[in-house]
Image (cartoon, rainbow, N blue to C red; front, side, top):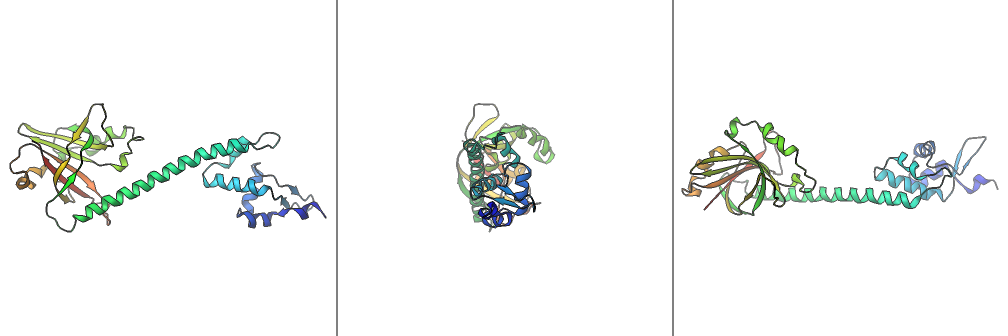
Length: 263
C-alpha cells in the first residue's frame, strides 16, 4: 500500500476540517502547515490525521483575529511548534476579546434600560418628575449663553480624558447651569462613574427632579419652563442631556431637561 493511501487528500482534509483548499495551500505557503506528503509526479498534497489538530489551531487563531504569520514566531528551524506558548498567547487574546464582548453587551443592556425609561415619559409633552441618584460630573465652564457657545471648543477638553477606566460611553454628557441670586454659572459636562480628586469635578445632588423632553436645547429657558415647580426657588441646578428612544432621529436627538432646587 502506498504512503498516500494512509493519508487524507487536500480535498478530504478540506471537507473534514472546514478549511478551504485555498486556505490549506496558503497555510503551506506561509510555512505553518506543510503537507505530510507531496506526490512528486502529480503534485497532489496529502495530510496526516494528526495535522487536523494543527488546522484546528490555525482556524482558532483566525477566529481570534491573530495574524497567521504570527504563528511562524512559534515554529523553530526544526519545524517544532511551541504549542504551550502559542496557547498562552491565544488565551490572552481570547480574554481581551471576551472583555470587549462583555463591555459591549453591558452597553447594549444599559442603553435599552435608558430607552425604556425615556419612552415611559415620551407619550405626553408635560413636565414629569423622577428620582435621580447623586452623580459626579467633570465640567468645563463657559461664560456666554449656550446659543452663542462653540460646541466643538467645549467638547475638546473631554477628548483628552482617559476613558479606559470610567467607560464614558455609558454615562451622560451635556450642559448644566447653576442658578443663584448672584447669577448663572454654565458648564459642559461629562459624567464619571465615581468621584475623583482632580479639579473640575462637581457632585450633582440626588433627589426628585422635574423633567421635560425637547428636540431643541431649552436649558437657557429653565427658569421660565419650571417656574411653577421651583416655587420661587432662586437657587437650582438645570441639566440638559441627550436621551435615547427606540425610534432615534439621527439629526434631531431628544434632550431631557431637568431641574432640582438647592436649599
